[in-house]
Amino acid sequence: MTRRRWGLAALGIVLLAWIIGGEWVSIHQHVPENHFIDALGGLSFLVAGLVALDRRPRNRMGWLMIAYVVVSYLGNWGNVQVAAVPMIGTIGQQTTGGS
Image 1 (spheres, rainbow, N blue to C red):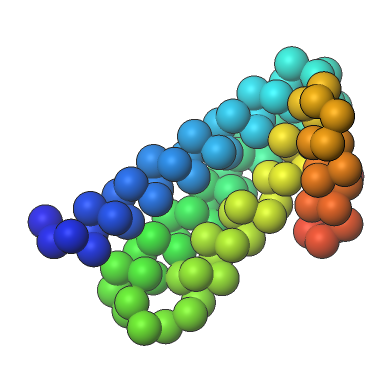
Image 2 (image 1 turned 180 degrees about the vertical axis):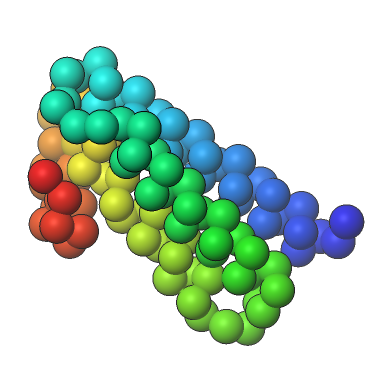
């Protein structure tokens, strides 16, 4: 594997932890949503973004999909009971239209 593919694999692992961690926070804060479907949506954008970055590295569509994954889970992470985090979660919900 090339250095770029190792970087994409590392990015995929970090974002997979971001998705699963965000869903874990939502589950433990008793957020009434279907967490499986929410995670599948993020995972599909993650996989599609990584494939797009691997196949066409100069195209910006892959980075846009990766950015959507990061921003769309800000709302889930906003449920953490830390002082500044709910504000970040509210911003993430406003940008993605999530509830």
